[in-house]
Length: 76
Length: 127
Image (cartoon, rainbow over the protein chains, first blue to last red):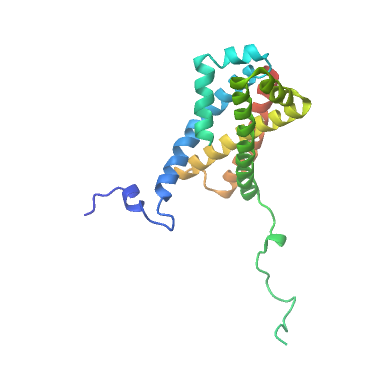
């Protein structure tokens, strides 16, 4: 009897050999995007439209800055 | 002659005569919005780097993003963002083994378009 999980048995198969990793990456980032996308759209929408000083001050605050960084990292 | 039976055979489904389906088109649109959003991320990064650099650099890209062209791009980007998010969510649902019937998938495709439009309108009106 084999005790390996389904994921373990699939790992390394396929022409690219990285399919399980990529699939897991897509699953995690897809679910993360459900939270990150609305957060980004709202904070960026609030940030865009100010003067130079207002925008610099807005993105000096931690919450908008962190949401921006998370969104750009997941997105790219 | 090699081809005596021309015109009287079943045709293979070439792309040109293939009827587009909701499922494939909605999936292709997820890719297109993904590529488009990569372009938007360049604009957003440019805007951020300019804000960190100097007021003149910032004013150039900020004026561009806030012009009517920029408004159209940002509205399209918002829709693309929500559509891409819902499209990815649809794949997660499929991967967990739910909603794999063609009729349910097609209803989800219409739902993605509709929900993305509603969310975009909410954002456009509120933010």
